[in-house]
Image 1: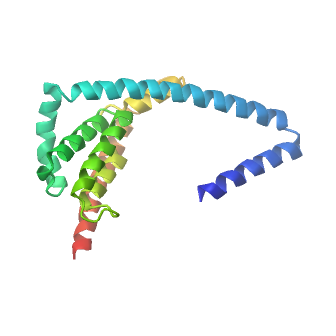
Image 2: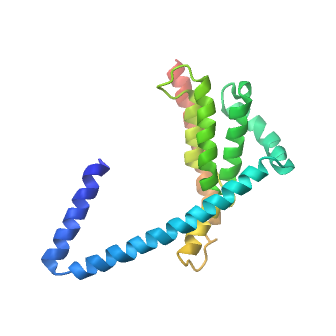
Image 3: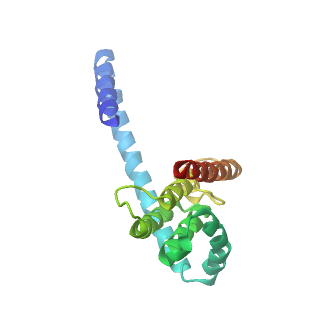
Length: 193
């Protein structure tokens, strides 16, 4: 669908610029937006490298072990028989810790690694199993205490108060996480019946 919409928008905007004599404005907008995109990308790549490295180091510390023990009970209730696959369980816990700390860029590689581990236990390789669906829901909800990636983006875009969004992020991610878990569990039960 996007393969159709984007070309239509581009053609319409170029046509509209030509017919209204605003081709110079369009050229300036293209140049400015590409410059902003490159700058933002470099900022996010740097942030991703930094936090991915920190999460890799943190995975071998006592702090993560303590958080892992706290999360392990919750994870075992949310995921079905996850304790049988210790590698997947550890990757899921690290993924959730990264999301809680707002390190979405570090959480993504951890989530992909967790998915690979979950795929090993998957009987039907061309379909998602229940644990894979739950992981997707948890990553989409992305429960966060410190939304560092969003704060970094707001800082890069010269926001006057980049941390102002913390309280709304707490409310929205907690609500999204609870609703996502409840609905996924409900739909899994319905599917089994």
